[in-house]
Length: 300
Image (tube, rainbow, N blue to C red; front, side, top):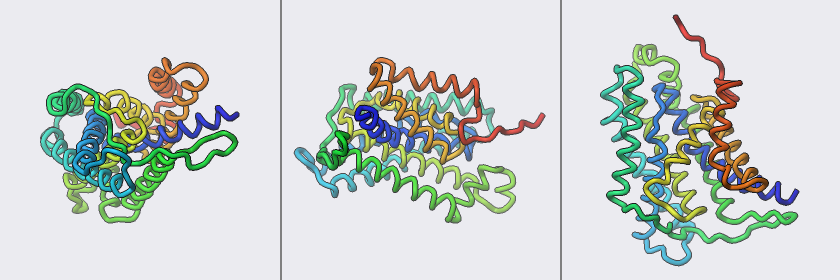
C-alpha cells in the first residue's frame, strides 16, 4: 500500500504537467480544429527559457520562491509571444486551406523548433537551475511529499482555475466558446475570429511554458529534444479526455501520469513510454470521442 500511495503521488505530479500541455492541444483544436504538433516544442522552449532566465538571475546554489515566480512568469511571457508569432506566420495564412496543409505545417514547425533549438542552445543537455529546494514536507505512513511536488500541484491548480475563470467569465472567454462553436456564426455576431484564435495560441503556449518550468525543477535536465515524448503523451491525454474538452484534458493528463507511475513502480520503466500509445489505441478502438467527449455528428 505504501508503494501504491507513493507512486500515486508521483503520478499525480507528472500528470499535472501532462495536463497543462494537453490543455494547449485541446484549446487549439477546439477553436481551430487543428492538432498543433509544435506544442510540445513550445514546452521545450519554455524549459530552455527558464534555464537561461535562472542563469541571468544568478541562481547557482539554492533558489527561492521569488526566483521561481520570476522565471515562471518570464518563460510564460516568452512562450506566449512565440505562440502568437507561430500562429500569425505559420497557421493564419492557411486558414482557408485544406486541413491537411495545416497539419503538415504543424509538423514542419515542430521540426523547425527542434533543430533550431539544437542550433541556438546546443545539443547537449543542460542542468536546470535549482529554483526551489527539494525538501520533504510531509511523510504520512511512509509516503513522502516534497516541496517540488507541492509546487507542481499548486501551480497546476492555480493555472487551471485561472483558465476556467477566463473561459467562463470573461468577454474573451465567451468569444472563444463562440468561435469553437462556429467561426461563421461568431464572425456574423461581430467577433474578431483571428484575434480569438491568436489569444488561444498565446494562452495555450503560456501553459506549455509553465509545464516546462515545472519539469525543470522536478527533473533538472533540459535539452532541445525534450518536448518530443511529453508532447506526444500530452496529445494522448487530450484524446483520452476528449479532444476539445478542457476538463477532459486535465483528467486525461492525470490518468496518463498515474498510469505511467504505476507501471514504473510495479513493472519496469522500460514500458513507461509505450503505455501512453497503448492507451491511445484502446481509446480509439472503444471510445474515440474520449472519456468526457461527446460524439459529433458529421454532415453529409
